Image 1 (cartoon, rainbow, N blue to C red):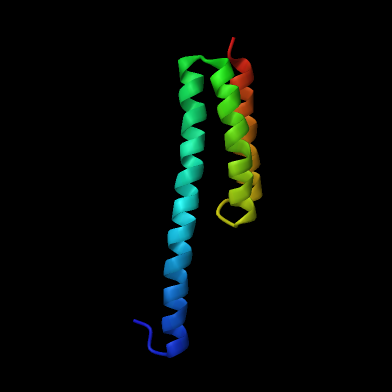
Image 2 (image 1 turned 30 degrees about the vertical axis):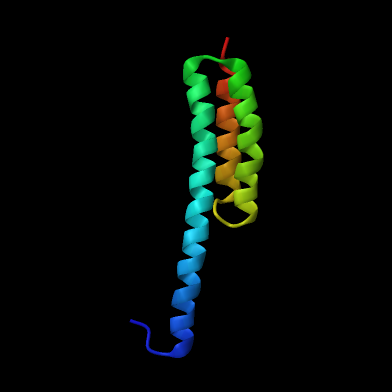
Length: 87
């Protein structure tokens, strides 16, 4: 347990940041899930629309420090490849 007042404050700060980051990560995962569902359904227009919403959400999470830039780029690239593969 934290002993000093500054350590206690840091614990409070971390708790707030953790909650915010958890919400952001959850939101991004929802966007990614929508793309996945559209791909498995074989609906190219829905998948394209979902990807256009997911991409900025993912990059916004990167700018907030939730995901690493390369991770987001990799996810977008792979999803884009799968959306284009829908015939």
